[in-house]
View 1 (spheres, rainbow, N blue to C red):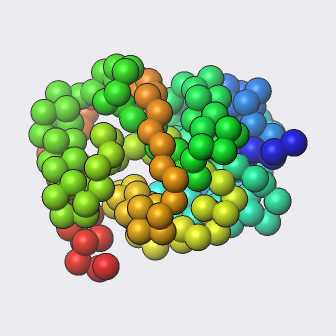
View 2: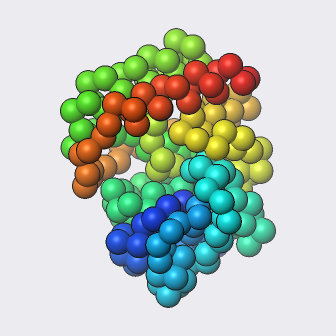
Amino acid sequence: MLKIACVIPAWNEEKNIAQVIKNVRPFVDKIIVIDDASKDATSKLAEEAGAYVIRHLINRGQGAALQTGNDYALNLGIDIIVHFDGDNQFLAEEIKDMIAPIIKNEADIVFGSRFLEKKANLPLFKRLIIYPLAQAFTRLILGIKLSDPQNGFRAMTRQTAEKIRIMNREMAHNSEIQTKAFSYKLRVAEVPITVIYHHFGQKLSGGFKIIKDLFIYKLSK
């Protein structure tokens, strides 16, 4: 029986983390929350909800949190690792869809996509500017032909997690993981997912940070 763990990076998510853990629990064997130096009760509530909790003493970024979670899952002997956000924007029941290609031995890593069959209520600025720019960059510069370059919902085998070490601490870790998956000639699949945005206050600076991180990642290769 394959053992499945869900790795959830979290920063100041005390309003959502307990509910996210409750939603995810029926679909995985272990839940690992990486509290990236939150200033609220994220760690306490995650522990009370029954998750393994690892706390960064300083804020290191989402990419670093995911690598911490991967390492912990590997130490637990996990076979499939699922990356899932702590802000309650993903649907836990879609974990079954994400891991299906792996269980069927059809993929080594599976990426969720908001741009396939299902719909996401994307903020207008992201939908019309940020994601088209990010998608064009990943296609033209990084050579990645996936439909969703900035999606945190993914699943991978143990062997994949051992190969892909996440070095980029910020948002470009998404493109780093995708680039390494193709460069290592892993079997890659995309699965349509639903994303529910609860906040629409995306600032220009926040959106363009994604683009900036992608350029930094390219220059660092």
